[in-house]
Image 1 (cartoon, rainbow, N blue to C red):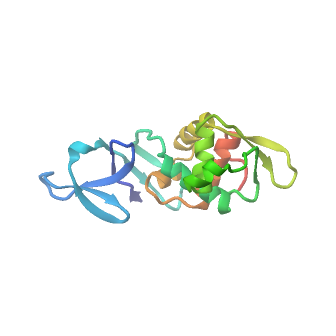
Image 2: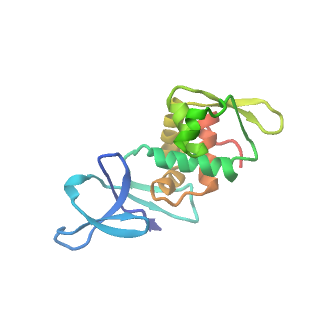
Length: 187
């Protein structure tokens, strides 16, 4: 069993694992890029997540106390990237994405950031099966939010992996299926 730990959100809604360095709770540290940094706890909203995950029995999770935390934009961009570059490419074909304008080229944002910006701006991207070209569903802001909730409720170990920055292409594939179809069908 692995304890995922304790988390805190900063003012920008970014999620960090935290720890108290000493027993008196005088030294507060945030984990960022695998390095612990001393911080002021007043700058963070403390979220206590005490969840234990049995790695062998990924689907059977003993939930002690786990509040729902929406994924940050950075986490969603990473999930889109992992899904599009490997996790979901065996079934996922996006349709209806506008061509990049000259103005957009100046922004120098990555493909996944652009997808998220367009979707959050109201675009709905159609998703087709790569082989049959059958419409499977769509990607839009509401579906992204709902998929995160579904992952929390039905695929908690994968949800915890995203929160714990331990997600991979398989995690992203499950999330993308939840976005597009509302359930994990493939894989």
